[in-house]
Image (cartoon, rainbow, N blue to C red; front, side, top):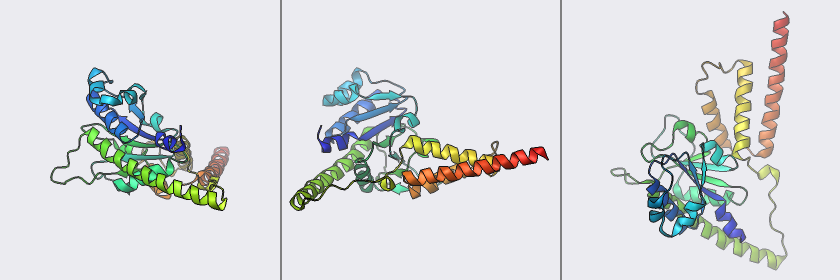
Length: 269
């Protein structure tokens, strides 16, 4: 597998709780026309069957190799960037990307780790909890008077943006490699300060943060409110790198130690 083919294989299309398997087949076809092959199905209501294969046309290999998981968290646990599609404004605004920027960002970060583009249910999209697992949201700027896009159309549109960015990136890579060879310059090595954590590490950080806030009494377990949702939004905007996440978890561990010592002192009294 070439370096460029490997790059596209790091771009993952995730379909959540799809109700009609024919949409899965059509989405697989849309993916393959743009050179994408990594499909993950999260708790599909109807598994791909002959109807899905018929609509997939020549993309039955994408369907055959699709991975089925139970939750979105499982589908994206090893991803460093996750973008969720949202067809409407939410109560709590989230960092947004335009489709063109979305394609650019996915391709750029696919050099370092798997990335995911997440699509929700045909009728209701992604839930708020699912959208909060995403670093960014993307919305296709369809005609406001008739903005009805079916699932396969949405997959096709955003997959095209990924393909466009991939081709531009490919041209730049060939040019840069040629210049480096002529000047005998090594390729850039990405150090830890430029690396983003994968989602499993990010979720552990958020859980650690919540545990620490509960230990200090800042969050009441019975009435947590929107504290963690707002903190997720804050840190998603900041995009902490690997070293920053380690530093923050060290701070949280320190807070927990102080809170535990304080509890022991109060209990003795």
